[in-house]
Image (cartoon, rainbow, N blue to C red; front, side, top):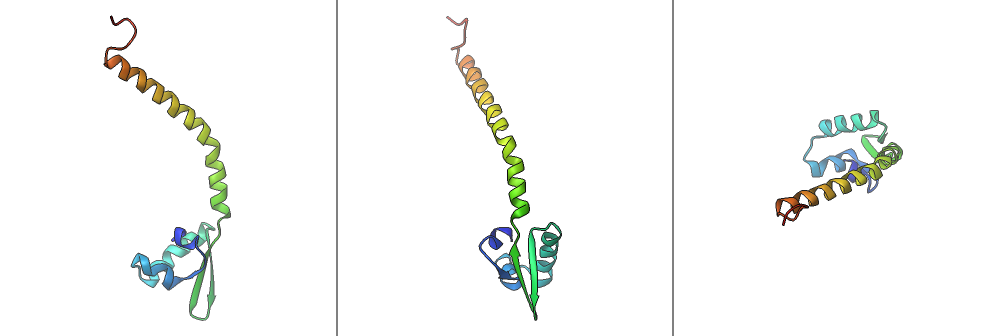
Length: 97
């Protein structure tokens, strides 16, 4: 639903259709997203129109970005260790003649 809402506004029936979801089930999902402050719904007559509120998602992206550099360093260290281990396994390590 969030991916679809990133494309623009959708009424609830249109939003639910590709997910093969009933209107009540879709409405329940949208209520959860509304409580998480990720979706805003407006009712116009019988039509429920939903749109994404991306601000909370941006905050999460910024928060997680601070950890990216740390994890990249750790993965690089792990890659280096794995290369050393492979080299030793092939008998190319120090002390081998």
